[in-house]
Image (tube, rainbow, N blue to C red; front, side, top):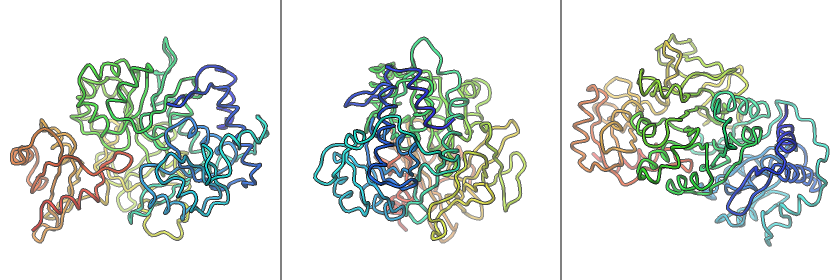
Length: 514
């Protein structure tokens, strides 16, 4: 089955049922299929060659879904820009991928000026603008529906997904049709298993960017006939309210948003307790936050793990795993679950396979793994490496005897203090369990005696830093104890809601000078 088959079968099966909705309107399955095929065919009228790169700068919207699907089935390579990262990163990505087309929404700050300065031969806007001679409506109207589509090999590219290199310059992981279909199957069979059948049509609320992890649910929900709601820049309280308004049954969030949901009242959280699934991904969630989310938000929690270079889900911690972790084996809650079908995970140290329980670098192979990086030959800052079909992830961890995968951190984040290796995640877990402590980041700063000293910043209700430091030292062995802790109003975050460790290190260096 191809992605075009998924779209057509959904239209034939679900017809006039609402498929996708945003604040501006909605489209049915029939309309979505027709519109996507017209956009795909319309690109041909603009002399956009098969395999050309198309840069897309759109908010969470119906248009973002339509453009993504149209580019995919027409054999183009989509590069989605995050509206939140700003023009510096947009320009770096554009320079790296050299797009033939830019599709943009002029309502995004700076988008029209950026498009006008691009080297692309074709500019397409969501609404009429002096910058772009074409709108999406023009493109769709220029071609007939159900025009014959090109045959696309499973390993042909459908996207470049950019994340920061070790130097901070974005790097583009090559994503194929095989990768995307593997994700759809694994989402259906592992993440969403047992949650799509019910007395009502499932409703997925896209609270996070559909160009990132939330977008992994688009195809599975088209396939099952579910309704999808797209929120743009919604705050935690607005997410909870939208789930109540639309009868949301499913959503996916990053752990920092889950932590902010826990600041809401039980009344505000009440709509979420009726959800069939709350998935979380993108970063580790402190176990104490996980326990609170299970009790206060919903017990139907699912964690999935992956990366841009190996499309999620690679591993899944199911609702049954969460229940077992809450009642029988608490160690499970500190894991990322067990590998999905067709995903092979090993841990290696100096290319030697580690035995169960031994820490090493996570190495993954299978249909989820990308072919490599765009322009890899000219880059020396890629961080991860592809060798013989295997991705060396840079994530450190181990496999427990019961089969669950545990991560201990990133190899580049490991702190070496007094000759000991300390993984920040373990220290962050201990600090997060202290009452009144919310988000935590732990880094290693240069120290003339210890090599590196462990320093932490936290947010929360507990303003007594001395008490937090004393409690952390009670919970941790000597060599893992922070030398200092600092309460801050907010931690620096990336546009995707992850803690930005590089900026956190600079913050803590300023708070703890010699």
